[in-house]
Amino acid sequence: MNIISNYEQRKFWILVIIVAISGFSQGMLMPLISVIFETDGVSSFLNGLNATGLYIGTLLISPFIEQPLRKYGYKPIILIGGGLVFVSLFLFPFWQSATFWFILRMLVGIGDHALHFSTQTWITSDTNNGNLGKKMSIYGLSFSVGFAVGPLFVNLLEISEALPFIISSVLCLLAWSLVFFVKNEHPEALKGDATSTGWNRYKFAFKYAWIAFLPPFVYGFLESSIHSLFPVYALRLDFEVATVSVMLAAFSVGAIVTQLPFGILGDKIGRSNVIIGGLTSGTILFFICSQFEQSALIVTTIFALAGMSVGSLFSLGITYMADLTPKELLPTGNLLCGIFFSLGSLSGPTFGGLYLQVAQGVSFLLLIACVLGVTLCANLFYKNKILVLLLHHTLLENIDF
Image (cartoon, rainbow, N blue to C red; front, side, top):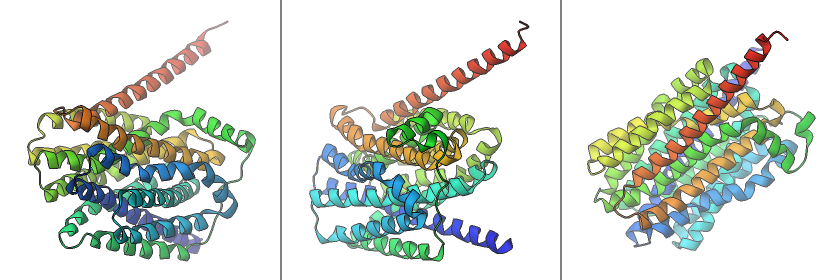
């Protein structure tokens, strides 16, 4: 029993390390390429459009990834995904072309999604709900740590443009090699409604947990727009590249601080309450930040606080989905979380880049505040609807017919 427990712990931490390195690569790649393109005079719209390659790759692979996972298990999918990310990162320095880099970003998106889908499904399937918030918060924490460190490596551009890509690819290779130390496993077999083929399985998962897919969506929008377009906006406000890197790191560090506490709190008081609290404070903080965006100190401080508020939305969304979804539908639910995260991540650079071109003179941070505010309203509406249904059900039970 102790041997099994030790193996399960080792497996969990190997998955956590893999996700941390993936976070590092993503955290570095988005601002790195944005800064390179901005320096080369590429327009903000095309800059943002190029950043969508990562999420287009994620969406392209999404319809085809669940069946191979069920057939071959978690390990092969992680190995293929991690290998693809390593090769793509290694190829970046060989040819600086917007088209070539867009294709490489698509390949990174395909590999990253295979890796994340497999690891988070493995963890959610292996863990009971009473401990799921804690484990997924550690999972999210590891990604956030990597994501926080990533932007700091943008400064290596001063030494060599190729150096950040090389370091990232080597770290990916090292993390990828750890997968060979775990045994392959398969998700739980389908039964009942879950045996439906094609889109019906997605329909059932969406019916159970649609509200849980909104936090991954909004976090995807937030993460991609802040890391790929805020550097462009900040450079136009005459901030130095080093200062922007610290601002982005502050957001990620803030997310790190609250990942574990919010995960444990979600286990105790419910994910919905924690999500609503985070969205409320995040909306207020980004609105305040838009009014004081000329001050590097204020922006950095508020970014850290905003990271603490909304940095756990993705992991909270996954655990919320696991609460609402039957166990055999967890791979489908995890896949939908990834799809919604990608849709949000795709929307961020696209609409954010357009916003920067059209709404000149209006703070970019107001866009972030508005997106968070709309998501907050949707969650409040859902919670109110559930409370009304519960009250109605209670009243019917108490009526003496």
